[in-house]
Image 1 (tube, rainbow, N blue to C red):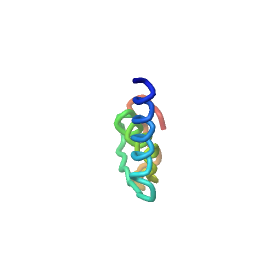
Image 2 (cartoon, rainbow, N blue to C red):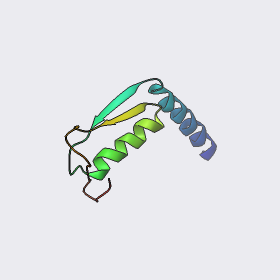
Image 3 (tube, rainbow, N blue to C red):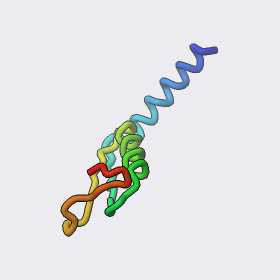
Image 4 (cartoon, one colour):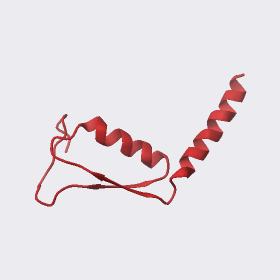
Length: 70
């Protein structure tokens, strides 16, 4: 049973990884963003093959998240 599960899981991951190959995603960030709400989707999108850009307002010199990451 475990071998079957491993095959299914591997095939699913390959399919998911290729779903977003060549796609671009823009993430817009505001001051005091929630770290998990920003980084978790970015990491998952990159795993799926997407190119992720992060945009902030030009008026903001530096942004900090809720955990003080910059």
